[in-house]
Image (cartoon, rainbow, N blue to C red):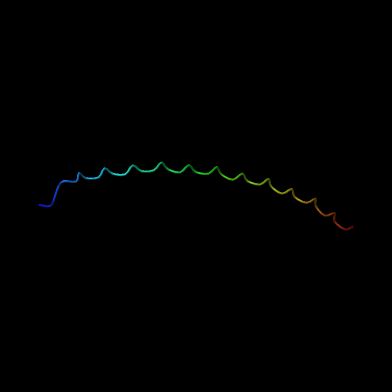
Length: 40
């Protein structure tokens, strides 16, 4: 058997999960251009 003087290392604690960034706000929709008047 090997030397058992060293106790086993405790497992490393997991780091806390990173918080998700807030979602990007959607840009406002572009207004539609006014319709072209039909030529007579």
